[in-house]
Length: 556
Image 1: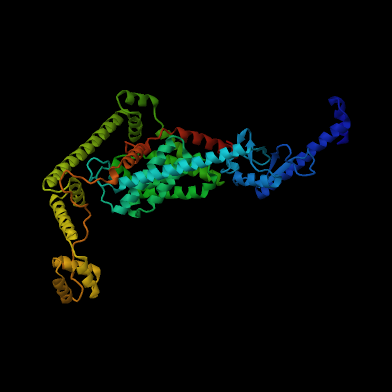
Image 2 (image 1 turned 45 degrees about the vertical axis):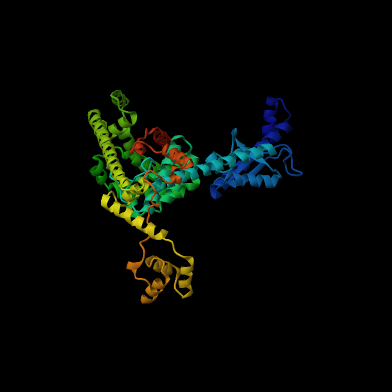
């Protein structure tokens, strides 16, 4: 070391002792770095250099001594902030890496912190700290309110059944547009699940992945309330799993790696059940599988990414090769796209049409035209169904029933006019019995004799309020009336209005509810295949990233 110092001192025009001291410093840092690398390889504990603010050094510490923090990189930045604050007596601080403030709620490795990284520690004033806290609270509050409004809006829609002619409602239909008969509770859960999913997808398009993820996870909870038979017949659940993992990727949420792998397994299993192993069910229903292939591209791409992050490069390459085959097949000729658009078709129709026909432009025109005709036919059938329904409701209204009750009865009777009329008559009879005047004193007399209140009130109603006859009736039946003498169960209808034109106000028609419903309906796609309309731009970026990752570990 001394020989080197004497050799370079004349060249540097400085004293040999100063050169020797500098060389010793370089040697010490090299040893520290070597030991740090060895420790990191063996224990995954990294050594991070801290650039502390002035006055934050420990007592009696040499000002020239560097400060290091040993930590794993898979911990949240907040944990490191707490450790630094406690160790160096700093109250409010933030960490800066390469000019960027580290987010407290994200892991260090996700934010590019590496072994031997230099992190600047800055003091934060009370005012700035309070502002940060206020912004975080506002963000959380806004997210919570969005979830609540979405849930409330779709709850209102899930309770509507079309009995109110002027109010929008949702109907669950199959891929041919035919309404599905689903139990009320399951239908309610399915509408909420699909509603949260649509809201989440809307936020994903706006790149608001943090807020989107919270809505997608709520959708997942609602789907768990649906029967397995229902989930195995639709692809909504599988698509949701893909969207959740895609959001994990966008947020670089590596802590969700294990959950992501489980969700991709669920998605793949669900696709097999819904589409068939060779997608034969899909071809039988839609005639082709070209449009749905984008879902498998995204599935294989995410599987490749998670395999790479899990250290399984061979599996990552295998899945990526599948992705590249699909990507080549699904990438569209820009000239063909332009030709279809010039014919008056939308870009979405052009994309879906070309993928459905493997890029054949003539077949794509035929396919898109056919799709338009089918959609128009469905809409025409729905308009006819509503018109016929309105005519029947008007007929029942002319018989003296309120329009609202007539609509509700028709809904309960599945469109059967005679059955609806009987429901209305039963409701009117039940209401008449319920409204009959009973003397409280008469009921008390029967209660005093040991009869139950419900049976006593029924006996009095059957005997027109005559106490003696009611007592005799109960004695004849030993205090228990037979089922055929009991009143009919409460009607699901509201009490009939005094005139057909009088309608009782309902919460569903309130201004607040109308605003909520309008708000959530804005997020619903007007095209049933919107979830298949992927430009593949984001997918292409990830493909290129994966190729770079894998080329580093196994150069070609």
